[in-house]
Length: 88
Image 1 (cartoon, rainbow, N blue to C red):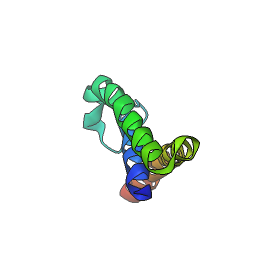
Image 2: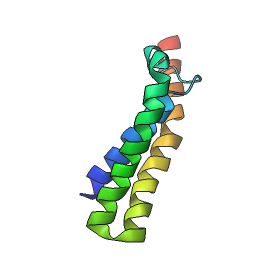
Image 3: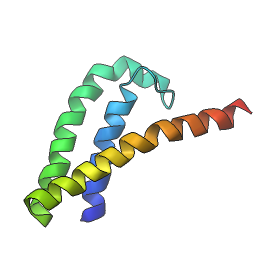
């Protein structure tokens, strides 16, 4: 269940990252920026709620937010790495 909560939180972070004008992972997502921003809130709330149900209050909150923050840190690096691979 731990990995499921982290995966859902990472999906919420992916929604926020794809709505960013600086991303190049999926350029077509920019026309869906507003729905992606709106979708990130209930998805992250669902990740927090499911983690809190399984692990308790603060522990669940920190599990979900750790997955969220890890994805927000990793996605720009993934974007840069894929961009560098395609540039060669």
